Length: 336
Ligand code: TRP
Ligand code: SF4
Image (cartoon, rainbow, N blue to C red; front, side):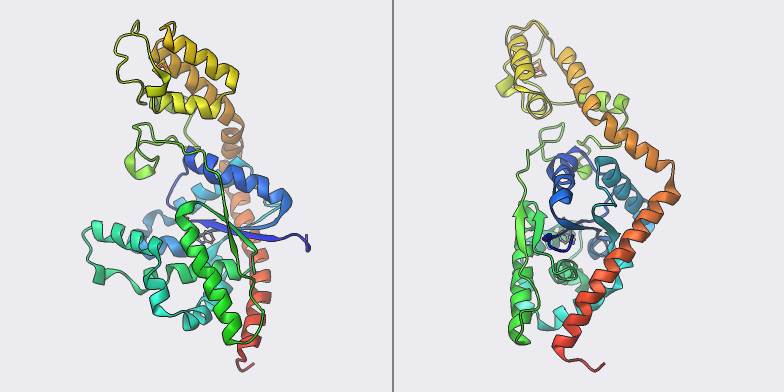
């Protein structure tokens, strides 16, 4: 354990996760936990940066995320799975980091600009952006540096944040004349981009997603709404999978070459109709998720166990974060 490199990553609890999260993030985390000492955080403070006035669903959202993680195979015996707000050491480290972070560094963070835009689009003007939102990348840095992590697996949209974390770590080391913090590196994941059922980006706010936790029936119903080759109107029209942006795309992700070829040929000669094709795809997706969904349901029936996992994981995270914090406080030369 000790000689393994450390990985830190997190997700904001915004509700039940969808297949994009599974394929793009969780599947990768599950692999990484065998090779690295992993810390995975449910970033509830980060959720508050934009949803500070929508907290009624916070508890449920946290529960849904941990259930999705466990169902997908995040293993609390291998990884440290924790809730950000249960590790106050990160907030303390955040204070110290916020002192040394130049204001213009956070202001030019492009991801933050995107977040600010989302807030703005919600009819709120820029001056209503909270102090906490501006601290978003610094708080994320505190998450990562709390464990002195080497690597941060993230999607492309988060890379700018991690670059800033590197800058802050380096600045800390320069200012206090030490080599205390490791400069964390983003670890880009190759994401098979899964479109939403309507052809746009999959996302819960677009109502075009399939949840990890959806039942087989709901999955089938949703897939029925998926976009197909628009030129194929009747069943005996010949189709073209290349123009079938959503359904055939899913086939490419969920089946092997042989089956793809079979579907492709059947579509081209109209020996299979779109309704039948979707039915088969739903079956395919459902069978590849069956184990995950069963496991999730098992955990869901045992909420006490799930709470215990999150509390135990947070305790474990506290121990490491305290050790790192103590070292930082020492380097800064605070009164003890
Ligand atoms: N900001 C990340 C996101 O929205 C979530 C996150 C919080 C995170 N803390 C982190 C990711 C630390 C990596 C490392 O997806
Ligand atoms: Fe798409 Fe399948 Fe219809 Fe062909 S048969 S257009 S691959 S849904």
